[in-house]
Image (tube, rainbow over the protein chains, first blue to last red):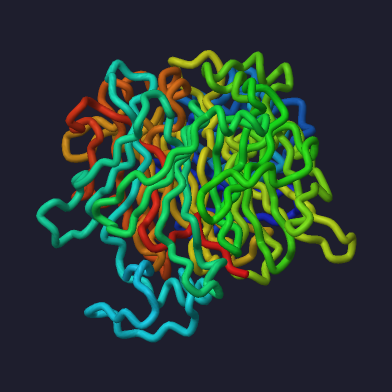
Length: 123
Length: 466
């Protein structure tokens, strides 16, 4: 079974690299090894679990790199990511509860990523 | 166990010792140890807002799994008039009066939220309670108050009711006090302490009470309108009271993330200054506590339920965290996300950092389970009640008649349901009990809604300790 190396990078500097099978979501793989990620709906309708793609493989690029890889190439979605707009996907945001990796990649995770994405009118 | 029995009146199977003379339990842990499994539930049941021409009623539900009428409504106490909108209710006495010889947990105070009529039900016979007294709306309006909501007893036999409006259904609201003969004693607080009101909880050993805010009755009676939120007609503040003096000592504005703070719960241990409030519209949980160094209370958002996208909605759907409760052992905070269709439990052993233990996706807009025993749920989980031992969580599905009609119009036609989950408080898990279903769709006069739930001998949202 194909699997990919996904490195989670928290905004406080912690990192953790997981083996994620291509049939598995990033959230599922994280939970399996006890890496805590925020989540709520588990169906792509809210942005609790949102992460941001930093780079593909071990290419050393970071989020300042002009040639940000397309998040659509890096992940396959199990369901429609309803909670993300096209613009947010263009900016690299990804819903980890329904996203399975298609390549080795690095993702910024944690509540601060969620704070960057637009809020609902209900606060 | 029924604590209507007088001291010394030993019932069969009632072989444990009481170390106090009044109603209730000496401590929260005593409530866990001494209580038996709930055999009956009282549930607010209503026809307001449906085409059934009948008065609201208090349903007596059989919760004894060994009974032939398990999961059935075995008695109904009908109100004398139509259109009350029964909502929340409470006892004349709870564990806070356990020092009071002769006082019994015997009378249910049952207000009509919409009518402002206040009913007193004698529940000496737990299975067949009877209407005893009615306080008519006109007598309530005389104190320039209306829209009764939360009922708690005051430790010496009086009863305090939060009132959401003035006599015209506008602001300000306040608090109405009844004496032990169920007559209006008067206004509890000096007028003008607050504008909006909703729920309250008191912690007498800390001489504190915290009250919350919904809106003026004229705002929420007709239904929910987003423009009212934008116009600031809905609340977002907590009021911290001096319990003895009946005055507001501090008001905490929860801000944009704290819109419509509804149910408020202190931890049960009487020493604690910690509590939680669910801000329904913002769908966040706030933890509040007394900051000793600053000599004041603080509130901080500790759980944020994100809105979800649904194709039938023009904007993200908020969770609408309409009810919360704390287990008697103060270990878990339970709550309902009425619009999403979810009940959840968080470990609050570190109250500043709640940890999600488990949740159930059932009913509502997004619930994975949409029917139980072939019955479509037609609504989301709403009012909760937990067994005193913390092992069974029950809930009903109606919020408020006019709001139900907006979000779950089918509920008026099908009636509400009461559901149950088994809780493992050691492992922190919830499991839906698919064998349990109480269906208000089968009521003789027609489908009814169901709201707040209470046990005959005290529960996690009624009892306070001195």
